[in-house]
Amino acid sequence: TPGLIDCHTHLVYAGDRAAEFEQRLAGVTYEAIARAGGGIAASVRATRAASEEQLIAATLPRLDALLAEGLTTIEIKSGYGLEWPTERRMLLAAGALAARRRVRVARTFLGAHALPPGFAGDADAYVEQLCEDMIPRVAQEKLAEIVDAYCERIAFSPAQVARLFAVAKQHGLGVKLHADQLSDLGGAALAAQFKALSADHLEYTNEAGVAALAAAGTTAVLLPAAFYFLRETRLPPVDLLRQHRVPIAVATDSNPGTAPITSLLLAMNMAATCFRLTVDECLAGVTREAARALGLLNEIGTLEVGKWCDLAVWDIDRPAELVYRLGFNPLHARVWRGQ
Image (cartoon, rainbow, N blue to C red; front, side):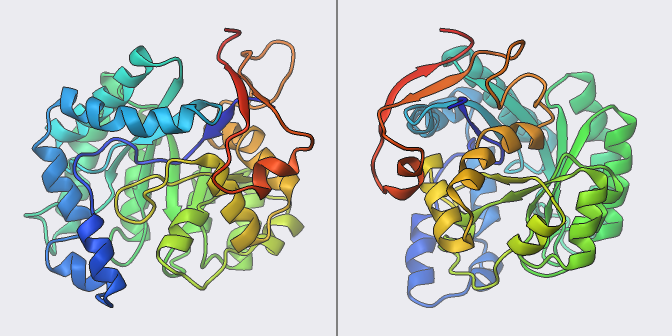
């Protein structure tokens, strides 16, 4: 197959949230944990306290687990700094991974992941800081190619995201959106309005949102591990995505809070089992459509003359084995840029 591509991860962070996992198993809600200073805030504290080298050291084992399954390109977001020095350090660490391993890293600035401590109740002021200060610096220092945001009642409103995206576009950056994961705020339509590369999660997206994605050529990125880990019940509108011919990618969403997963093979199985994707959709979702979701389809994602020679060679009889078997890694060889 083409080398596997994980087009949505939060791979760079410090600390873990295993204690929260235990709390959730005991019946404490995610919201209650967040109000008590857990959730993203806990990862922010740990990540702010870590040096660039510590972030790299913490991330390499996670990256290696993905590489061992034939991954050749990975997208990595910032978003656990929520202030410039740490956001910059995260993006530098993500870039440094490509110097330590034979892998392509696509970097995404997710300063609009959550409200930082000190901005409670004043999201507009933080959005202003992102627009006036951080996004221009990201572009100037070439720290990322894409700007992402989390559009949700517990994060940023559609109007705030629209302001961020307008500024990102002015600086020549692509955009993606965490859309309609927990409620339908019209995130898919908002992503489409800005010709986003992708809209991700989409559990609550309605048909108008799907039609907008189709018209804009925006890729839908499904994240079954977060759905599984949070024990969600609302399925993304897969049949509507198919009817409207929206490209469907599959990614791990690897992150410490809601998807501590470092296996794209497992994500494919979850996409098939939880979301009823076909084997072909799963395989396209971690190759061709994942490349499309990163704006890199002209370079990677399919095996064609003129593209990078990124391959995964498997010891299997039929493609379905990659999706069907759990905890099984039949990778024979990983080829990155022909080597």
